[in-house]
Length: 494
Ligand code: NAD
Image 1: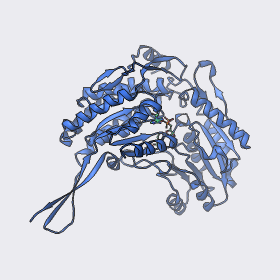
Image 2: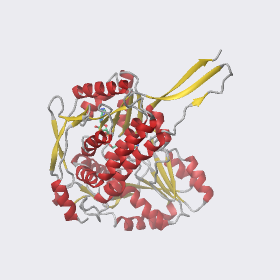
Image 3: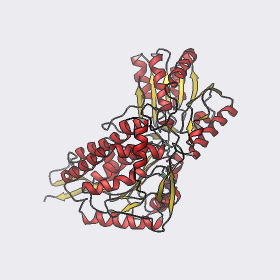
Image 4: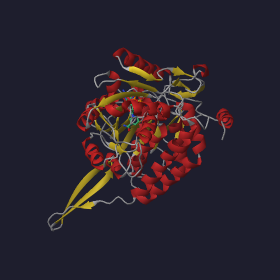
């Protein structure tokens, strides 16, 4: 489809901005709304319900009622699987509409929404649903006069609070295992990108997920998010977002009911290039690792650590590779870099560019806003050379397309620099030396390590962070751990 065809479809699109509670769309109890603008051109898309405490009370009561009724929680796993697979099929059938909503709402290229975000969402539900009737309990190896059953049970009511960078996909990484396990779920999308989460609520109902089992509450973190985090009748809080908010949620759990808190938080991931690497391929990977999704990626390879002897050579290649990552109209299928999610985020990125300059780093590429005439929020991919580990641009998550370049003298120094971060989400390394690849991969304190590639993933592998990048894992069978309690039942056989 061409840019003009997508634009035509966009102008015919209908937006749903209401919350979804107990199987129906409704305005926020207090009647408040907030305006949802597109970062593509600043255009108002729709008004969205701004939920707060009163809506949380309704949603939790409805989720709890549904859970206690057993209609979903006690359903045979094979039946939940069928329903969730119908849900996945419906998302797939609405892929074009959902991709368009995602792109209009948060500015990412339509080609990514269509090829990655929406397929990644329904595939997650499909894969997880397929797995749920293969999850067995255990029998404890205890003396013969006892039978010890170890079973996994749904935790109860789950609140999922998600960010704006991969809105539907991040939501599905939470809701799929939570629903498959039999929980009731309340999803809170980011106020910056609520539209796909709201839209799929109707598809969940159409698929046969009972009323009250899946609810969506749009609104702000300080209102609806906070109310969810402190609610005494929520059993699990599953979060993806910044480390700062993650810490607030841990406190909220302690202040309320010790609800389980699972956190997928920020990152400042090192992308390490050794002198023996294939520099052409490494350069392509470094460029993609910082420019993909406008750099608004938790695993963005935002720290390039390169052997000092090949730094200039590699950097020239990275600059060249970035020519293919220039911002463009997100609805143009050729565009690889779209708009930054909103003005606030764009200002934050540009502020970090200024901080980098003030700290004495050398701006070697980009560093400016672009396409301002569109009314949208676009930033050029940016490279800072001559960065040191102490600089803020090398320590703090910018969440934009800003690459900090640091050099090392040997393998030991590379590992030490890579691990010198409060984060531990991901890391990449490039080398043609097999032994070095294994040694360094093992030494890196990160939840995902990529060797001679960057940012690959699959439903079969867990995803999550070490250190202040979080706890628990999304995806794979390990995701079920977050949404279930283990029970040991002792039966006296005498
Ligand atoms: P954010 O922490 O500002 O917001 C995330 C969500 O939390 C939003 O829905 C927001 O409304 C809500 N929230 C904010 N304050 C809250 C509060 N006091 N109580 C309850 N909820 C609150 O993050 P963001 O800007 O939306 O997303 C970017 C961040 O997400 C980055 O740090 C990025 O690294 C991280 N992220 C991590 C992963 C991962 O898997 N580790 C994936 C994607 C994004």
